[in-house]
Length: 177
Image 1 (tube, rainbow, N blue to C red):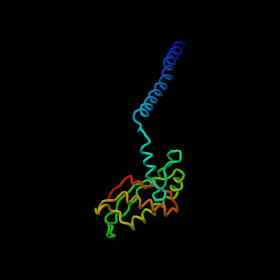
Image 2 (image 1 turned 90 degrees about the vertical axis):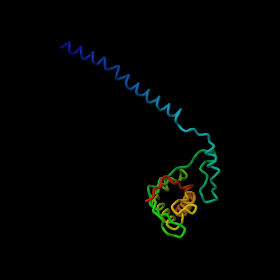
Image 3 (image 1 turned 60 degrees about the horizontal axis):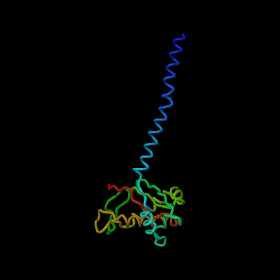
Image 4 (image 1 turned 180 degrees about the vertical axis):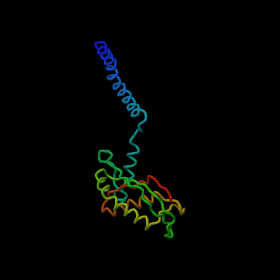
């Protein structure tokens, strides 16, 4: 019996360094991969795009307000609108096609929860505005004028919600039916 006990102790003695070394090696590999990502692959910010974006927004225009605090810190959030099917209206008022859209609402971080809780009202405003307005681009009946469409939806949503909550509607995905 003593031989069996000795062999079990030898096996335990051989396993114990592996139990300690293996998690340490795993942590080191993970830390190395994370640091490599953040040092080499993460996008660089030089602040010029942020400043240009802040200068483009005019609170008096109805397109939205500034996306930055007075100290220059980013204060915007995005609210996701799941796929919504909308009519593509041409200048003579006919429905040219139906199009599936995915979009996000660019808003202040304080308003994101309010807008998220009111998605059905927002979807109603989007459908209503799109059904009543022509949004084809530059005389091409099958193309969408994205800037015109975004401004139309921004204005319609803000009107429906009774305030200046949405800075911009970003079209994320478009698919014709």
